[in-house]
Length: 330
Image (cartoon, rainbow, N blue to C red; front, top):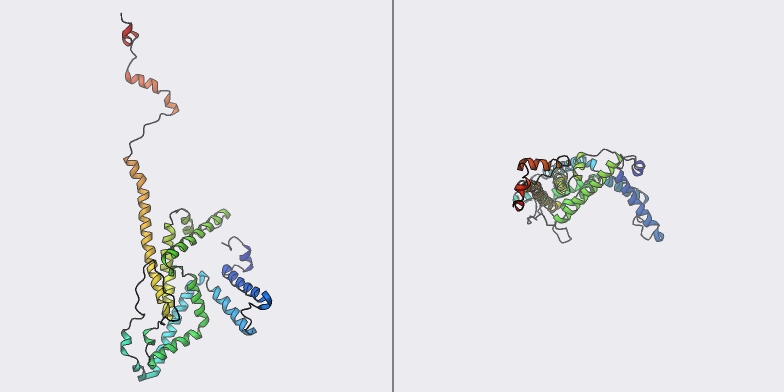
């Protein structure tokens, strides 16, 4: 919208990731404000060298710009590539061990990839990792043997070498992680996002700007049924695939994916229920009209003047005075 409307913010950032560039710039303005306040008392970067500050700034800008949704599928490709690199590095490490790989308990091959936990319902919240929480690792990295240690070190080495790409993918996933919240907050924000779409759509219409058909559809729905349906599609085609790809690299995120899957089912059930309610509501007036008695016809002004003559013709000629007034018959 900002680009199509020629907004000042779009002009400043040359129509490139406008909001993301604005967010990055705002972050560093705030950091500079903190550094200037009370003689640098709150300068969180004062311990860094000039080069470290430059590296930090570069890392932050790249990571924030990676939250642009136009880069979503590129991020998904990066995650698949990282996972392939981890698998390759792990296999090479295990091949290098030779017979030492047998030190890993063979039962690990049958160990489920994640520690067992109850599947949360649509209203549940994924447990947050704490210092006391066990770290979830892939089966190939479990145990005290040389093989598990080598597999773990191989994964860490790949992630260290691709740290910037990993940071970008993690922040992007966090940016679209509303479906990982408990169901009610997830539903609240899903509806609020579509409310914002409605405001933008009205602004586009007022300015004569192009508007996607899906956004126009939101204006026709006052029941939030469209918003819930859009959330089902958003989770299915955007959120779940990228989060599942991230879990292959960071298995600690398994519980969040469990919550996303449960919420997806919750949104599907809610959408189906709302569709049925809309159908029932649409059918109700038709049924009521069919059961109601036909209303009396109201004559139009053009035919109203003909009513007395038509009524007289139907009854027949008016009686004579003698027939109409027996009292006068002596």
